[in-house]
Figure 1 (cartoon, helix red, strand yellow):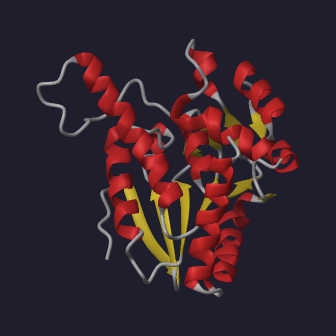
Figure 2 (cartoon, helix red, strand yellow):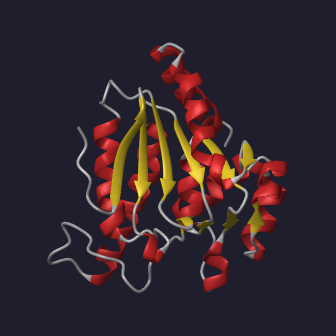
Figure 3 (cartoon, helix red, strand yellow):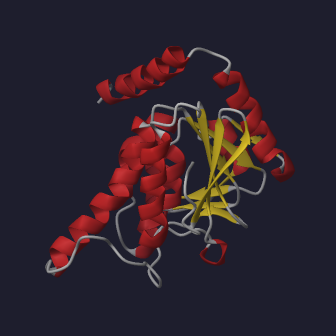
Length: 232
């Protein structure tokens, strides 16, 4: 049993599948700490939930995640008495922990990308093992648009491994939008489907994965990520 925080919902739409929904649609599921802290906790619970074989991650409303929230960021835990620079460090560590938790999760993670996946939202999608996009999905490495680097949350590490270095350079340095059709063509997502088919398609993939042995799927995920890490 997983507790809903309000900002992160957990459902079981079919046997062996957990649907995790970022539930802050009024802010396009931005990565406020009020969302990321419970997401980290949910992932920690799911990795040891032996009834769950595959996790599907999506966003409520019209966006997957719009990335950093500069207006309503929420509260970072365990920062009382820290200086401002150290507070900033703890903030980034928390967000990094969410990305790493998705990679280290025993279960494969499928990102069901609906609408915008911007900045940190793009990083969340890239931390998933499989990405499926709705036809209205789009992706943006937004750091450069905001006068910052576009390397947040491992993006400079994850994106080249998904689409190749040249394309990653171009997308990260221009800050342009990548639509669902292009995302499928360049390998950023496995496939694009009509919006109404997004979750059913992800469940179909999850059902196929869950039919195989647990050691087989867990070790395949682990060795794929290890191989990508070794390519540096």
